[in-house]
Image 1 (tube, rainbow, N blue to C red):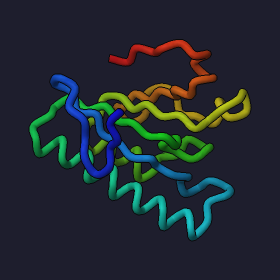
Image 2 (tube, rainbow, N blue to C red):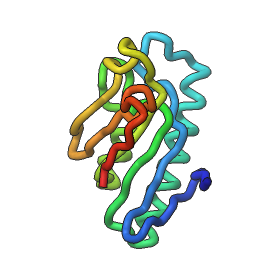
Image 3 (cartoon, one colour):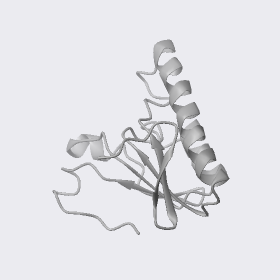
Image 4 (cartoon, rainbow, N blue to C red):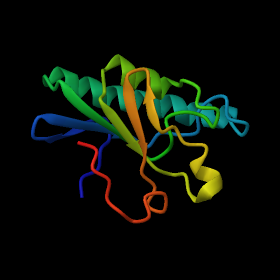
Amino acid sequence: MIFLQNDFYAADNIAICGCRGWVCPGSDEFTQHDNKIYEREMLRLEFSLSAAEKMGFERIVGMMHYPPTNDRMQNSGFTELFSKYKVEKVVYGHLHGKDGYKNGLKGVMNGVEYYLTSLDYLQCKPLQII
């Protein structure tokens, strides 16, 4: 198992970049404490994406635990970074159950394709994204 923190994993010609993520601004439950963690996670994501770019990777896949948007599917610092670095696809989880699934971004936003990959959402079936 390989953990990403401020770096990336090279899989052939693809850089896998990411961070844990956090609750995004605009969510009903977003607090000042959440903002501190959110800002730190954005820095970690930018370090990861920047490192891959500096190494010359043109194909980048993003990974996060938390969704990259709030439950209203509004742009966030995470989605802006994924667009800025021309990330092809982003996988994330955290959302579970039918009520959770509806709050997840699925499809293309600003040229980046997003996949909800929670185990129960995928019914324990692998999803090929590349």
